[in-house]
Image (tube, helix red, strand yellow):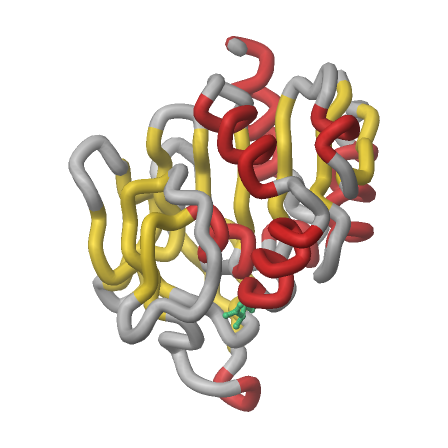
Length: 190
Ligand code: GLN
């Protein structure tokens, strides 16, 4: 299976490695043509304003939106979650895809120095998932039809709506591939 990783900015290499470790073929997505023939898609962590602006400049915004709206299973991590969301708290300064009916609060846990790790209980996964939070957002509003899969101190940090999953944390950094496995499982049903 070919799994696209948006490769404009951020830690797309780590995601490509995670996808490859699960036996899928990572495809670095930089143009609309790269979206052809994908079984799933990853939007990486990084800086969501930059990523959104680059996606617009590269003519990728509408193609991404229609691919995801067409049912392409998609995982967005951290900045990727922000890109997928419908809005942000506070003034809107960035393009967003609106493919997850949530409002996110950027940098909600604090600044770079407040980055942290936690063992998270994730609905549907046994045990806990080691989660790395780096200037992470949390989900401030959850729309109808959006399932909360994990929270920290009552704030949702992993959500799912249909075949779109967003995490505030970075599953690509720990070697625990279960979140990427979830994406590939959704793709198997696709
Ligand atoms: N703070 C970044 C943003 O708002 C996200 C950080 C990350 O992806 N680790 O875009």
